[in-house]
Length: 281
Image (cartoon, rainbow, N blue to C red; front, side, top):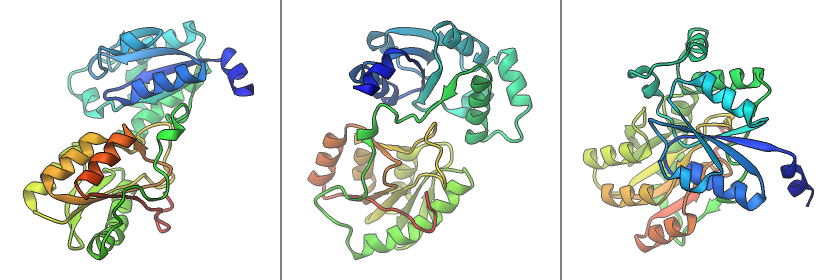
C-alpha cells in the first residue's frame, strides 16, 4: 500500500536497449502502478516499445543531452537502464552530441562499466538517479540452488568448480561474464559477442558435455549490465551440445522463466545457481 502511494508521487524513466528486458520493466512498472517515461535507442530498441509504453522519445545512441532534457521535462527523478546497448555502437559511426563528447573525453577508460557509469554521473548531476535495473522485476531473478529436475553430475560439478574461478577472473577484468568448459578446460571465453555467440562458438570447437558458466561481476552493479539468460540461451546450448548452465543467484535474470526451465528439463539440461564464495559476486 505504501509502495503504491509512493509510486503515485514518482515518475520513473527507462532507457531501453535491445531485447526483451525493457518490455519486462514496462510490464513490471505497470503492475506496480508506476508512471514510466521511455527513452528508446534508434540503433537498438525494438519498435514495438511504442505499443506498450506511455510516452516514448527516440534518440540516437550518442544523444545524451537530449535524453536528459526529456527526463527532466517529464519530471523523472529515478531512471532504469534495461536491455543491452552494444558499446561498440558508440565507436562505429554514431554522432554523439556535445554532452556525450565531453563525457567520453573525461573517461579514464572506455569499457562497459566506465561508459555507463559516465552516463549515470551525468544524469545524477541533473537530479536523476540511475537505480537497480531489476527494481520492478525482482521475481525474475534466479534463486540459489538447482532450478531444473536434474542436478549436475560429477563431471559437470567439476566443470562448475573450475569454471567459477575462471569466469570470476574474466568478469573482474570486465572482459565478459560467460565461459564454456569441457573436462575442466576452458573452451571459449566471452568478449563483446554475447552469451549465445560464445556458446555457439564453443560447440564448434568441442563436442559433448559442455558446461556454460555465466557469472555476475564481483560487486555487480545492478543498475546495468545484469547477467541475463532465457529460452534462446537454452536453445543455443542444445545446438552446441551443452548439458549444464551455472548462474549467479540473485543477480541473474531469467527471461520467460517457466518456458526456459521446461525446455531445459525436456532436453535433460541442468540449470543451477551457485554462489561463488571466492568471487563474492
